[in-house]
Length: 134
Image (cartoon, rainbow, N blue to C red):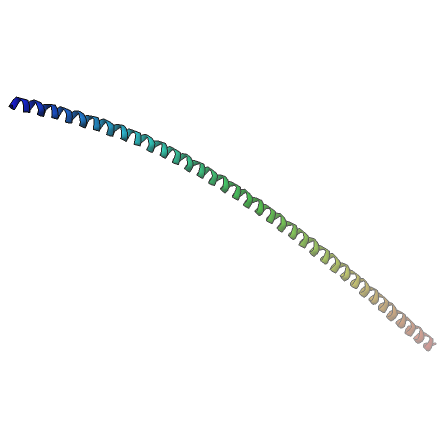
């Protein structure tokens, strides 16, 4: 009776051992599968992140190019405005100098005329004095 119980216990224990081994194998397989899935998921995430960062970089580059173009246009416009302003200033200065020259010419003419008048008056006075002396 005792041996019978022992044998049945042994059989039970062996069965339990096999069952636990099988469970362990199943667990290992499941964990391997999970790991693979995790790896794939992380790879996918990494790819997505890389693509996103590349896109961001492209956008940044485009934005900076656009900013540069805008800056160039602005500076060109500023230069044109400055050129126009300086041209206008030159024209105004030329006109002012022409006016001044004309005024100076008129003034010198007037002076010449006045001097001529004074000289002729003086000549006439001297002539009268000479006539008066005789």
